[in-house]
Length: 306
Image 1 (cartoon, rainbow, N blue to C red):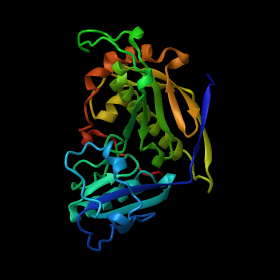
Image 2: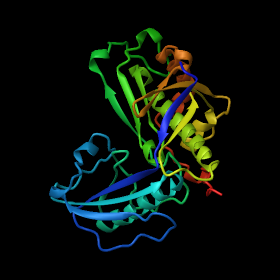
Image 3: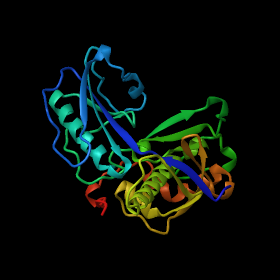
């Protein structure tokens, strides 16, 4: 594999949130801040260009969405990459107020998921685990092989059982100027481990991305090509940071990256067998595989650029 991968960092990105409600909001101005201000527009549901059926597949939402005749309130904010993530947070804060005002369902259009506890205030601190990232799952039935059912806490997954049926992609990184991540050929036994690998890599790459941005006095008024190492070394503390948990720093893993269109594809280091690699990582990631990030007060605040 090549020693570096290249991707384009856009000049600006747009954050977009959709509130689906039974009534329109009253006039409300967002709190003033430096930089771009969010905008809002209201559509009758039957005239809206947004198809909420796209969201239903991914949203972990128990209540039904309002009927098609309901209102769609769209909040958006376009900003230079150097103004992220604050502009995205400000837009979501504004959308939260409108969702509370209309008793509506708040949907992040980048993640295609309903925002949990949409009526709570936006946290001042940014963290990727605070519903800024989701995952798209595709299972290819033609790749699926019948494998023996085992209890994961009793038996280690076996490499020769790999069915390679799963493709998993992140949703949400693009608004911060990074490509989305994709991992393909994942065995069903390693599904949650693969999700955690993507979580950890997303956290790692975004931290590095903002360090790169902070080291530049200014970005030109055009897209910039950025080069990063094709082999990335990720520590266990990075995964812990995503979840807001304690984790030994020596629980590290390496991953290889290649470019596929607008995606960064994730591979085992040095081109090794993907599911053998995931089986090794599974040992120390499995205990948090199904956990949600929850300790947001423990996250480090992203400091303003000096």
